[in-house]
Length: 263
Ligand code: MN
Image (cartoon, rainbow, N blue to C red; front, side, top):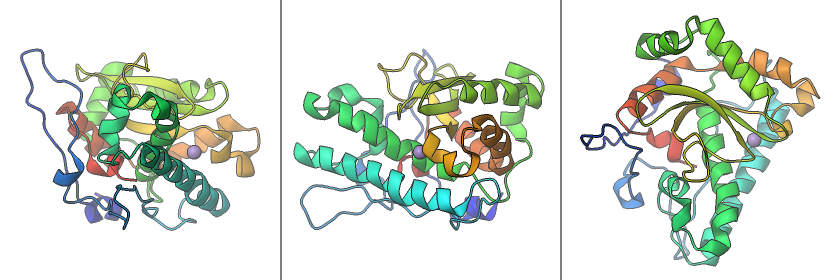
């Protein structure tokens, strides 16, 4: 277990699995999330706060430059969080649990649905993205995740090829994901813009994401210019498989890791 992982407190919620098996997570309400770093501001309405990167901004060099990380986290991610807060505040809606909001967008007032889909998705997706990378990453998964990948794709390199091709095939801005579906199976998918595999019913392939790569140009262009395939190829060297393995174990129980919901 990496230092990053051991510093973290993981909090999972296990669903009561019915006869039909596992279901998608019901997320905890804000009041129950005692481990959350989400703080209340002085205003009445809860505002999400941007969490620090789990490592220094130059820690992922040479794979991802400090300049990209500072802009990506400090400007792009911060912007999503701010816009999300403004959208929720405009209707006087408390923030609560972001995972719950993203998983049930249809419950939102219609006038903020698109803004929350875009900016809430952006807030949540980037939190996962920072978390599944680590300066000491790379290599291959171990344990149950390794076995599940082998069952689904055979060799690890074959899985990597499928995932990399999915990421390369995103037209315009979006993400590629490794997720766990409601029957516990792994699948690789892509989403446009800041959509998340959690966004039922707006997403065809719904599941709990455990690994994701941001292929918006802001994620790589300053360093790799138009060479997205090179960015994807090198990105494998910073994937934190211990973290992804934790997410897999949690997702199998219909659970999420709280860090993936923190912004
Ligand atoms: Mn991004």
